[in-house]
Amino acid sequence: MLMSEEPQIHHDLYPILKSVPDPEIPVLSIIDLGVVRRAELHDTKAVVDITPTYSGCPAMDVIGDDIRKALNDSGYEPTVNLILAPAWTTDWMTEEGKQALKRYGIAPPTDAITDKKALLGEERVIECPHCGSSNTKLVSQFASTACKAMFKCQDCEETFDYFKCLI
Image (tube, rainbow, N blue to C red; front, side, top):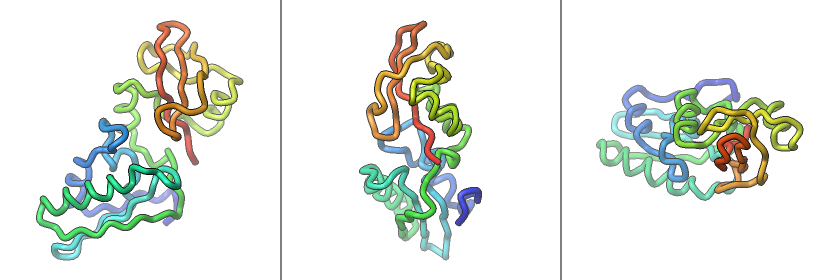
């Protein structure tokens, strides 16, 4: 599957998978996070392929268990496959998911060039999810999880996580 391809999700399975939250950021569904790459239905057998946000992500076991439970509860016999290639990218996150991050207080990922400049401290371009200011400063390359960095807004003085761009 090429990175630019949209996930292939059977319409009967979509609402079930959309209801499964990411265990680390519960305001995101696994659909909005973009980890579900394929979900097929063969009679009562549901086959779901998921891709981790990064190699060794500890949440993937929980996500797999949550998918199996949601599908079982809906009357399907689930199989969940962990697919490592192509690697997950923040490009796979939905716009709805990015807006949910912002409402939750996490700055959503930017594009790769902006991300690099922000993480190297070259430019103040990451918007504070609390007040909208770009007068923000990198505090740490790593935050509550490896896929996030910590910033501080110089205007409202709030610290916040920034979901790093991964491509």
